[in-house]
Length: 300
Ligand SMILES: Nc1ncnc2c1ncn2[C@@H]1O[C@H](COP(=O)(O)OP(=O)(O)OP(=O)(O)O)[C@@H](O)[C@H]1O
Ligand SMILES: [Mg+2]
Image (tube, rainbow, N blue to C red; front, side):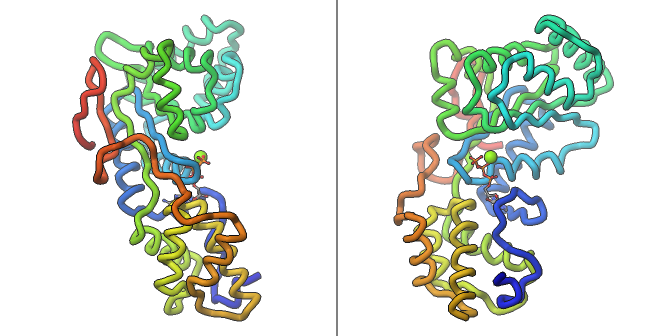
């Protein structure tokens, strides 16, 4: 619709986690580095949390594209599963063809499969996205998987990814054991004002824009204030503003257009949430845990 008017080859603010549009500002670079480190150092259990729309799934796709080709990964993004369906899906993702009917059979087969991979020094990774939707039964299954180990090594790396309430879920007494196994966790933060600006400009550039800029400085500041730096909200507001500008034949957009779109969407300044995990100031959002609790050990 507005593509031609703004000199774009494609729509710059689509809602899909398209790796072609990946923007790595400090927030996402730090998050990605933590995930890559977690896998490469075979940290066992890694947790990534972040508010709705901060880019967790996008980051996972970026991670998958960066992993060593020897790494085999299963990406489970629909964790509202019954345990047996979960195992079926896992086997499908790992390409294990042996038919199993009981949980014990699944675990035994998986154990053998993982030992063979470890002997060949090939890492195996399970990623569960939207993990805040996991049922207590499924969390228990995942805990059992994290038990699969040799005396010297974990057999499978597990990455749980979800909204901040995931961490609170794991605080429940019956899940304490699972929480204690998380050796690395990272809370993805929304963009700062500079990142919001760079993100928008990078997306426009990747969509083929070669002009001097569509959004005025004040428009970008308003955009940041109204979206709280949450990428999904930024995409929605920018797409709406481009459409509005096209309708009015405005090649350059100011804070007024952003305000109008944000008002229509009911986005008030300051409502977009900050990640709840880290009460300390500054950008340090990765925590590592010792065996005996929540000792903070700095960043990866
Ligand atoms: N680093 C990034 N580079 C490019 N686009 C991004 C980035 N982070 C987020 N996005 C965009 O923001 C949108 C929301 O990101 P994503 O779906 O990854 O968020 P999420 O944290 O997984 O959200 P949810 O909590 O709803 O699962 C994506 O469609 C993507 O287009
Ligand atoms: Mg997601």
